[in-house]
Amino acid sequence: MMRVPVSPELLYWARERAGKSQEDLAGKFSKLSEWERGEKQPTLKQLEAFARAVHVPFGYLFFTEPPDETLSIADFRTVPEEANARPSPHLLDTLYAMQRRQAWLREHLIENDVEPLAFAGSACLTDDPDALGREMRRHLGLEEGWASGVNTWQDAVNELRRMVEKLGVMAVINGVVGNNTGRRLNVAEFRGFALTDQYAPLVFVNGADAKSAQMFTLAHELAHIWLGEAGLSGFEKLLPGGTEVEDWCNRAAAELLVPSQELHGLWTHVRRAQRPFEAIARSFKVSPVVAARRAMDLGLVGRSAFVDFYEHYVKREHRVVTKPTGGNFYNNQNARVGKLFASHVIRAAMEGQIGFREAYQLTGLRGGTFQDYASRLGIGLR
Image 1 (spheres, rainbow, N blue to C red):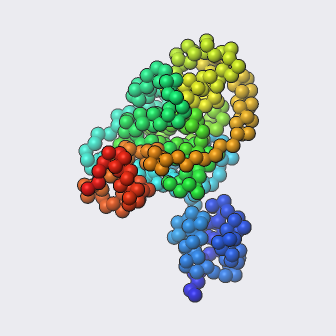
Image 2 (cartoon, helix red, strand yellow; image 1 turned 45 degrees about the horizontal axis):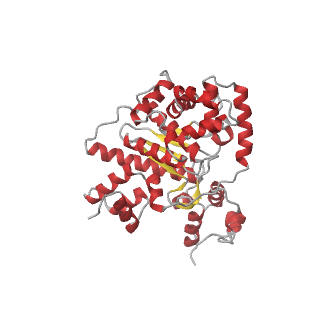
Image 3 (cartoon, rainbow, N blue to C red; image 1 turned 90 degrees about the horizontal axis):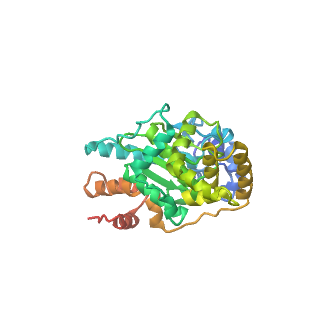
């Protein structure tokens, strides 16, 4: 049986990159410890299976030394220990997939003489972020009190995502890599990211996060599109003192979701409530932490009140174990692929501009599933 000469260093790097121990993989690869010591070598099939198990491109295992995998976008995360960590395979694969989508759609739109989006990259850090929040709200068509009229946080996130896509911005919410439920994204690593472009901007929200937190991330990443600053976001604590870009986008997002005028009006009714920040959160469909931070920024409460609430809320929240839910597969695709992107890809395939194999790769859907989703979008395949 033919063995493949592979560097033990590459095997060790690939395993560590995936956050796996030898014990984790012992059931599938009983000789892994010997491979890593260079005492034995795997067969080609074993090496291919190993690459799949640790989510590493197969070709990487034939490099002379481990590649230096760095993020291809700015890292704006405000949690130092996470920001300095090596990006996980789940994050990298998600980022690469979104960049492929953006590159394809950009080229497709330019070839079809579509005009660039005037708002993308139109703002700068010297602009008033509160004014930008109000401008984004106008573009989205959000009326006063819209969130309070929506029953659930899930409904609010869905509605906001649809509005963002109407602007021409791809809005993706996904808690796993593609459709692989075995590869769940880690909220502690990142909350979202923005890929800026005047033709095909994209915002990505980590769907493993709470729905209330997803609302803020979606608005925050949209502010990045207006600012023209691509990057990865974390903003775990929402405390003052993050990066200049993140603080600016946080303020714009807060005004978009919790307008100062509306909050001042609500505060007179909830200020003496037992849990005023939760009441604000329910009304605007944001997290209680965002509500408390907004109240502090507007001078409705002091910094000490915010910090006390934040510390108690986090302790209480950590006692609640959030279990991932599967949901309806096709409904999930509305967030994971989105009508904006899917419609362009499906029509391009129908018109012979691209092959169906490429369409499958771009959307992550295959065969009958691709056709069923097209039908649900009202696009019949010929």
